[in-house]
Image (cartoon, rainbow, N blue to C red; front, side, top):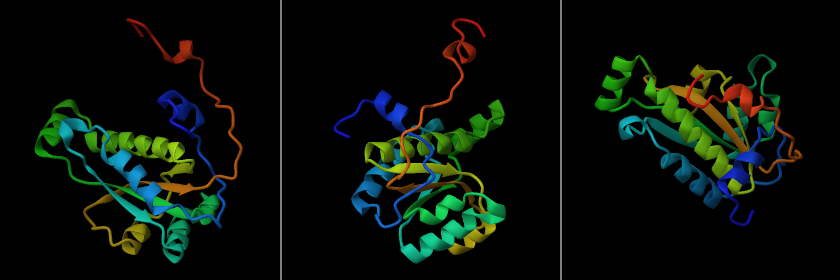
Amino acid sequence: MDNPSIYDLIARRQSDRAYDPSRKVEREKVERIVEAARLAPSACNSQPWHFIVVDEPSLCKEVADCMTSIGMNKFAAQAPCFIVVCQEAPNFTARLGGWIKNKHFPLIDCGIATAHLTLAATAEGLGSCIMGWFDEPRLKRLLYIPRSRRVLLTVALGYSTQELRPKQRHEAEKVTGYNKY
C-alpha cells in the first residue's frame, strides 16, 4: 500500500486465518509494527505492556500448539510470526485512577496497543488475527514469561492468502447517539 489513509487501513484490516507459510515476515516490518504498538496511548502514560515477537520457526510451531487447545485457532499453525501481548503493572497514577473509577486500565491500554499493532500490520501488507484463546500457563513456560505477568492476547502475523471480506457491522444509527444514548 502506498501511503493509505487511516480510514483505508481500518476498512482493510480483518482477522485473517490463512497465511502463506512459505513467506517469512521481514524483521524490519515487525519492528515498525511493534513501534506502532509501543506508541499507543495509555492511562497516565503507564505503558503497561510487553511485546514478545516469536519468529523462529520451531518456536512458532510450539506457540501455535498453545493456541490450538480443544480445537480452537487451528489456523495458527500456518502463521510465520506471533506477537504475544503481556500485561505489565501500571504506574501508581493509573493504578490509583483505576481503583477510584473501578476500571482496570491495563486491559484497555493493551487493547489499544493491539489495535495499533494490527493496523500497522495492514499498512505493511500483512494479515493478522488477534487471539485470546490459548493455554496461558504453557505459553508462559515456553516464552519464560514471569509468573506475575498475564498474557492477554496473541496476534498471528503473516502474508494472508484470504480475500478481503466485506465487513458485517451494525448500522451506524444502531450504535451511535448524538447528545444522548
